[in-house]
Length: 195
Image (cartoon, rainbow, N blue to C red; front, side, top):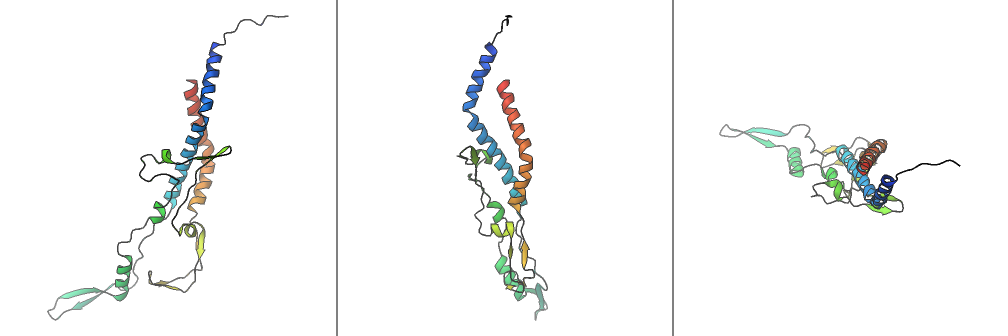
């Protein structure tokens, strides 16, 4: 029977101890990965979300009248006055500001304030937009052609308005990028572990 020789396993024992300690922080690492992915997803969704604009007035906007003194004065037409009254102070972006992932809005680092739920062997963060018309913008909607909309001062022309698919397209894009993102996070974690 042959001799096996001598072997110093002190370094292997140190590695084993370090791996056992890191096993306890696996959940924290997986939560961090989940938060990173969701923060990226929210960034993509928010950039893709359209911002509403006050419509432009078609046709004559004002009338010019010459007074008895010879001065010219300009007055809004009835349609322009209705537009001005309805759209006064309008700022778009409600839908864009509505996207949340369970984080506080005043947070300095959005990814660190996301609420992660562990369900079975996976991690979950719910992304939502409480703005009531969000699903209609995302997936599209029907409308009645020919119906007059007073706020726009126009009649609707199309029977179907196409969806923007902000969340759907962002999820698909992130699904392609996530293996590389997770690989980089894992390399960094393993590099910290073995250094």
